[in-house]
Length: 561
Image (tube, rainbow, N blue to C red):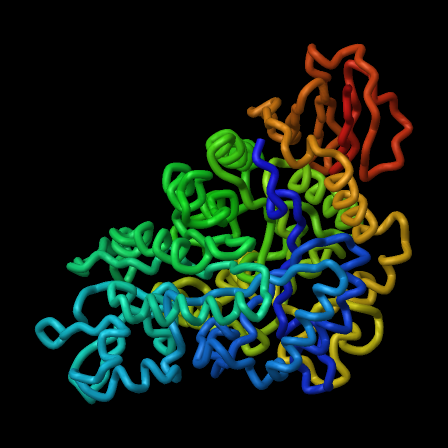
C-alpha cells in the first residue's frame, strides 16, 4: 500500500470568474479567492484546483490562452497570484493549475506568427492542411459545433480546431512545441505551484493521415477515433514526466476524454511514469447520451451508474488511482443531476451524494457550491447563457437538425455547462454576495435559501455535512486505502458497498430514491456491533438489525471492527 499525499487529500475546484468578485466589476478574481481562503480551510479541503487564470481573450472562459505566463486582466495581476499562493500555503492549502496545452488562443504569439507564412519558424506549431477539391481537408466536426477546420487566406490553408475556431490545436509532433510547453510548466512549478490538472490531455496526439470520420447521422464526421489516445500521446506524457513532472513532489491529473480502464492504466498506472490519475466521464456522459450526444434530458439509471462505478473501482484496484467527482465546470450541479433538487429533498439528497462519493476509493473533488447543495439554473432565454458550446449547439440543433426550441432549452437545463458557472452563493444579499456590480452571468434565483452564510454555522447544513465527511477521511485510513466491494448490483434504489482494511469493514448504504426502502444486512455483518460514523438523518433506528428501513435519500456509513 503506497501512501502518497495526493491519495489522501480532498480537492476543491474554483471557477475564478464565478467564485468571488473583489472589485465590483461583476467578474470573480484572484483577490476574491484570497478573501475566501479561510472558508475553504474551515471546510477542511487540502488542494485548490484553479480553473485557468492565464491571459486570454476569453472566447471559451479562459480555456483559450494567449499568454501562459501572464494573468488575465479580469482576474488581477501576477502579484495577486503570488499573494494567493503565499496565503494558501500559509494555511496548508496546495494549488494546482489548469494546464491547457492541446490548443491555444488564436491571439497567442505563436499562432500570430504561424499564420504569417509557410516558412515562418512558428508555422509548424499548429496543424495546417490544404483543402480538398475546394472543401475542408476532411469532414471533421468541432465539438463546439460547425466544422473543425478554419480557412486562412494568407497561406490558402486550413488549421484544425477541435473546439472553437479561436482555439487552434497545437502540433505536439513538433519537438519545439513540446519543449516550449515543458519550459512553461517548469516556470510555474519553480514559482511554487503544487501540480497540474491537464485539460483534454488525451487529445494532444492526432493520427497523421487525418481520415474522414463517420457522420452518425449528423452534419459532420466524428473526429474522436483519430484524436483521442492518438499514436504518440503516451510517448509525449512520458517525456513530459521525465523532463518536468518527476523533478517535483506534485499532483497531476489528466482530463482523459474517452478513456478506458486499459488506457487509464497507461496514463496513470503506478508504473506508467506519466500522471498520478485521470478524470474519466463514463459515469456522467455515457449514461445519458442520446441521439444528439450529451444533449438530452434522459435520466440516469442507478443500476447502470453502479455498473460503471464498480468497473472503475475494481478495474484500477492495485494498478492506478481513481478520481471521485459528481460535477465540475463542464457538468451540471450534482444534486440536480443525481439527487433531487426539490425544496423537500435537496439538502438530504445532496448529503447522500456526498456520502456515496467520498467513501469510495480515490481522491474526491468538490466543485464550488456542491458543498452547499447549489442547483442547476433555468434561464428563460438563450440570451442569458454565456457558454459558447451551449449557444453554438442550440443554433445547430434547432436551426439545422430540427430540434424544437423548447426541447433544446430542456436539454440545456439538464446538461448545459452554465449550470455550474452561475456565481457562488455566499449570502442572501443582492447578487448572493458574489459582487457589488452586475454579475457576468445571472445569479441563480434560489440564492436566498441556498447560500454559505446560512450554512457555515448550522450543524445540520449540507456544508457541515461535507465538513464531517472530510474529517472522517482524515481520521480513518480505511476510507482512503480500504478495498472496495459492491453490494446489490441490481437494486434500482440502493447503492451499497463495503470498504475493507485489515480487520475493519466499512458499510456504506445510500438510497437514491424518494421511496422508503429496506436494506438487508450482508450475512457476514449480521449480529456484529457497528458504529455509525455519519448519516444524513438523525437516526432513531438500530444499526445492528438484520433489516434496515431506509428513508428517502437516506445514507449511512457504519464501521465494523
